[in-house]
Image (cartoon, rainbow, N blue to C red; front, side):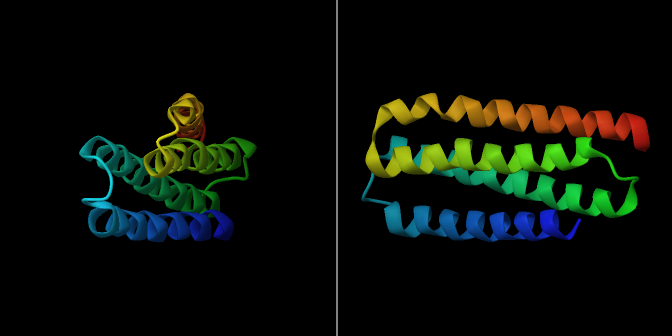
Length: 123
């Protein structure tokens, strides 16, 4: 429980910091197209940081289930692959990194499916 709350809070902090960096540090330094890509990464990181916080809270309230833990780990993997690849793409313009992004998206989707299953079984 505590671990996912910490991971979620760290990612929420990073999303705010990276959002500010994008708005103030990258504006005028990267093309608007890449600034939008950066913003997408920040947005998805914050959504899934919130998801991690919810998972941490649920782990403290529901019977122990690996489904919930897997959901949390998949959200973290998704943040790294999805948002991380978008951040690196923005900074390097190496377009092949765009091939990694969908793997993060699949991780996000799987995490939410597991959370749905947990809700159906335990709530």
